[in-house]
Length: 227
Image 1 (cartoon, rainbow, N blue to C red):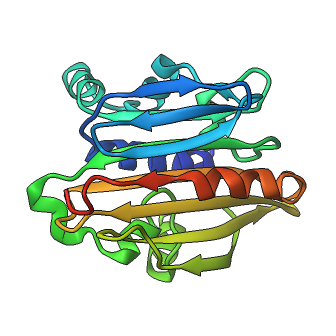
Image 2: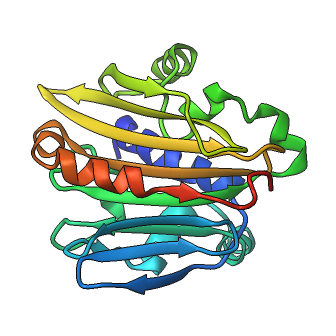
């Protein structure tokens, strides 16, 4: 496994390591799949043509490297969902070095009390892969081969009662850029992080720009704005 793939896989694991849980509920329509986490007020939708990733496969990706007890505890206390347009849909595409069709990955992370002071805007920026300069420098020193980084856009907006950041960035290898559209928010006491990641390569992102923007725009968190 290359260091770049390890870095992407580590992003899923790092997200999972903070997580504890909620329950998934869902509904459908002819036009969209709806992902709803009623315990945390999380909602987003994707086109009906997108396929939901097998939950066992998604959980296995998140718990890779954990012992049986740790993995069981995480599965029992976390919430995540992913939708993929790949054929076949696969959790592995979340951490792939070249994603040629759209996917969306969402997770709710419950942060232990002792770690909540570390939930800063920079921590939210770096929640999946290194984005801030200090995190990228550290990753490069550790041998990361994710490629050339470019920050395409960033804004620090979030629902009322929350703080966070929406950013679009890319990593380029061998002339092919992978685009990450990442929304990461936290509540007032930093007890939870809410993540939505939409990604595919640059050609795919341009071709499906409106479709992907609609997925991102639909992402909603409303749990009385505080906890």
